[in-house]
Amino acid sequence: MSAIWKNHAMHLANMINCNKETQAHLYLEQLMLFPVDVQDKIIEEISNLAHCNSEAVADIIGRYSMPELK
Image 1: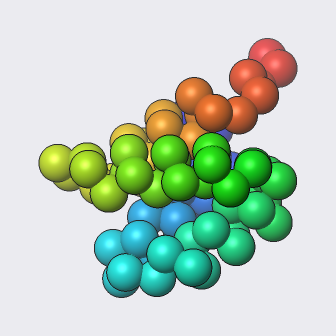
Image 2 (image 1 turned 60 degrees about the horizontal axis):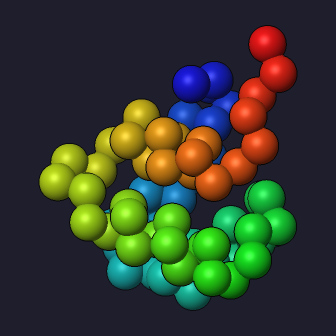
């Protein structure tokens, strides 16, 4: 996972851990223009993580986004 995705994941996880779901939705919308239903899926998966860390969040976001070019 790239450092950029990990940084985005850290901010998103912090919003979700602080029960700021509206801010998390807006962050995802601005960051990646995910449709609302996909935002819901991402937030639901993150909310169900046993150990919410940047790497786990980045992996979830990565599954719903375009693959990085290497």
